[in-house]
Image 1 (tube, rainbow, N blue to C red):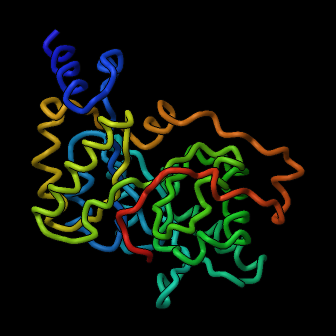
Image 2: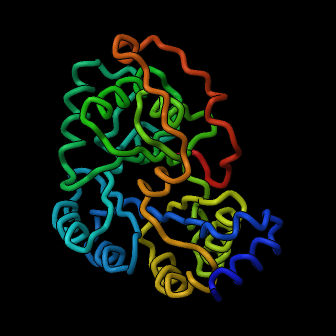
Length: 277
């Protein structure tokens, strides 16, 4: 009864219809770049609740930490390296103009390098996620492998990853908040508050962060306050399941073609908040 009354009060304060108060707003948090360092990765894996862990393929501690995350019941993603607009990026990044056969072999290698992964999100990729050639190849492979979900990290406002994932029948969502684009305890707290506000406004929102000491410290603090904040922490796949419409699956003959044009406008919404990478 107290939870219901608190939900009704929160709904009134943020301007939601009273009838929406019964459904607790959802937040999802994905921590990227795991696998390079043991200590920071262990702290993330040991966080309470449904924090999702995105591991870089073939990093020194990826397999061991992914095993630990699996044992802790965490949802695991392949943090797929893709070509950025500036700089060389990750040494294993899929690149625009890469020969298709090489790209296909490399993609398979990357996807198989993270044990227990059920989802994928992009590492960097501001150039690649705007390229139809690479995105068709990636989404076709993910679809054929039965990948459960895809999260577009939105490192570029020109990304077509989200609408293409849905066009290939892959449940998908996008990043709404970067917790630590600017590091610092107060900034991370501010971005987490923004995540909560977005969840109350739209029913659910997803944040991406990194295994920085400041980020982990704030999460250790706020994850004990979710009931007071009136939100529920869920995995990315659960957030997608509850919020997203069923993706429109393309006919197989179209999914096998790289020339298909999918309107970027299908993505909709404003997901600013992070710089291109």
